[in-house]
Length: 63
Image 1 (cartoon, rainbow, N blue to C red):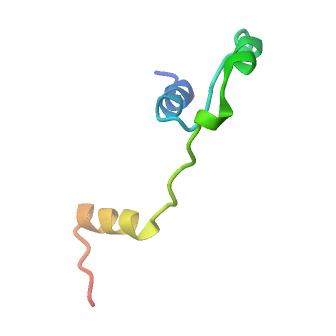
Image 2 (spheres, rainbow, N blue to C red):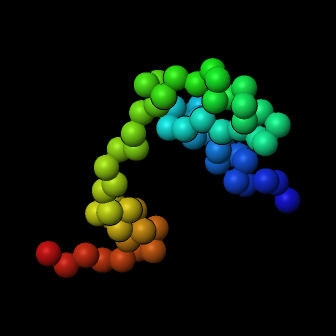
């Protein structure tokens, strides 16, 4: 089984949302990071997720 937390942390760093490090690299990471480089997450859109699930499960939406 893969380490999903590490995979998520790596991808979030690639996407510019966080810096990740290990205990061994904490000091050097804190010395070199530029927190101005980080970008916030976009605002969530719950209706898009609901619509996606409706499409997958073939839920008919009555309007």
